[in-house]
Length: 470
Image 1 (tube, rainbow, N blue to C red):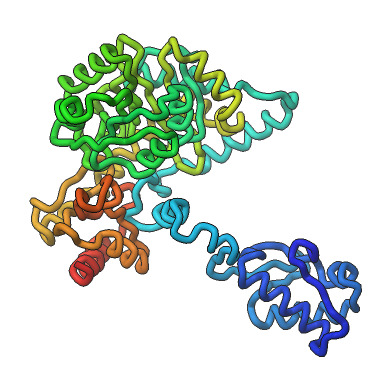
Image 2: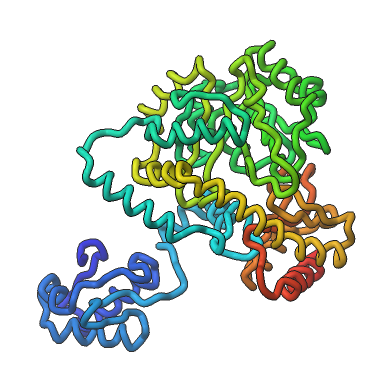
């Protein structure tokens, strides 16, 4: 540990050895090198490492404990005390102003109204923990061999069977590739398609991380507006006929919520077949339709093998699983497997086997029914309050969110940051647009994380922030 922290003592200094040790450890804690909960060596062991008397280290530890920087007990040993999390200065400077800094800011939490995460109160945590523990034991007791990079066959079978019923997709397990969440599936698809230098139709507004993923893959995302029927196909053909890829959320457009009409679905598939183009279907929220039955997946009516369907368990179970899947067209299945094997193999077997059992035993379908009822109930009081406070014309309920429209140019990013100070974190709408000039201002309130108690008071506080910042 002394080498890791560069903790040294200099007997020629006027400062006592005990104080040098105290300062070194305090600086490591304050800079975030030693995070809360990190275990420190006993004062006897550290004394041996540094070549000083045990009493010298013990005095330093006593001072650190008095300053509430460390906590010691005979049973648990000595640990760094809890304190506001801090990153090392070198790490902070390396990400300042970067995409990853924005990403970490927009995914922090937990907080009320946070988008993109399911409710923790409806999670069958005990059941999933038992299944995960059993799967981990099975994984550790099995021979130490490399698993199938496409994913565990058990899970691929369950996903294929589930999609046939819930999303209308007829596919074989050989077409199912298990990925590290939606992002892993998107990256895999872009790598397989090899469309560098081409352009892609992309919804406006659309998910910022997907737009950035296209750019990183050297594919130019061209913004196509959406209306009440979803992606405006005629606009896309008229203004960007050169595109050879479309990346869409046809089930529930992210973030405005429209379902892509059947006419436009057929037009898209015909376009892809005629021009040898591809469609990546982001099955955003998939079956989590709170009113009525979810529309079948776009891939369910694709008879030409031009749609690549990407889904995940992030919204239904947890984004912490980092578990998703791609349904590859038959002629691309081998290529998907090859790229997965060499560049992006599936996550570890234990999490896959646990979710496979969760689906097979019927728990997943029951879980979906339960959370849809809970989310619909949580959404209603939020809708009622803001329709009264802001006017019904400024409030809508797309997908798993409540959208508050703000005046053009309103600082929705600043409002979201201000709201975080009292534990709420609605997503600003403007970053979903390709440019500041085109952006509309608004706030997306996630209903999965909507408050259960004190709903009116929390909504009032958010309304106050909106009024103060606008």
